[in-house]
Image 1 (cartoon, one colour):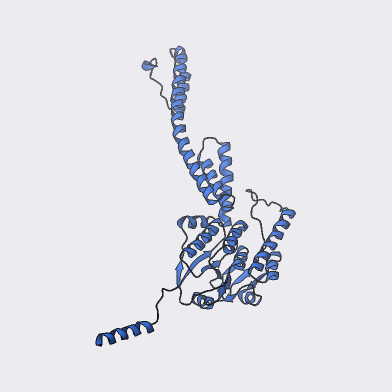
Image 2 (cartoon, helix red, strand yellow):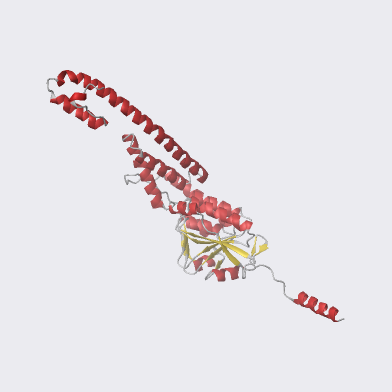
Length: 363
């Protein structure tokens, strides 16, 4: 009887005790800088990792002055095709989401901003010019086409996320820029959060794509950039891209005008490949293959060029010295010092040596 009562008490204790479940997860990444191909790759990989971790959402803490339109399009496509809710949080205080950042923020499942942050100024601009420093006059037709496309693109994104379409269009047409408070008032963003805990608290219970988020007390998991993404992100700055184009331009010119210099050509080729990747002309996989192929080609060239150059140099110098020494022997008896000086110059130039008077017939 005593055993039965003990078992009953234990059963009641277990039944009334609150069930403990593992804490929900929230993934987070930080984007601080120019939007480029490396950023697009990083965000796409982070969305996939957040899905694998069964995270409630992916929070992207954003602070950017803008970036490439091609990379922005890839990021927006990743957002719209993601099964994991994507929250863009413009932070910390004083951060901006201008130009490409405006497109990215509006495309998010939930758009949030920290106090004293700004968003807007999304008018497209072109980068480029001449290596000499001159300015290329923009094509007005192409400029208008780019502006019209950007307006229609941000209008589509804002309509998809049910945000203020008219303001979004003005951000592109008129480079309109507003503060966080104004953005919340105009329904450009969904909420203002002071910090990450405040953001998680406000996200808790919010329904996104028919699913309520459970972020209260969630474990925040950071997804770091890979080493290759760190390096490529460093090169994504417009100033670095311009320097790479200058190295490519002058390196190739130096190789063409001075054949055999090798170093300018190699530096120019590598800089050109990296610049094409930074401008989203070459995908990252193709860029890696091109650099590997270039390295193999240079290894092969170095092996064969060095051997043939050495053999041809030795054979030619020997032929020259045999011919010149025999031709010069007729004058040597007459103490023609000009021949001796001429032979010495040939020796200095080709790496050979002139035999002394008693050894001059050794060839």
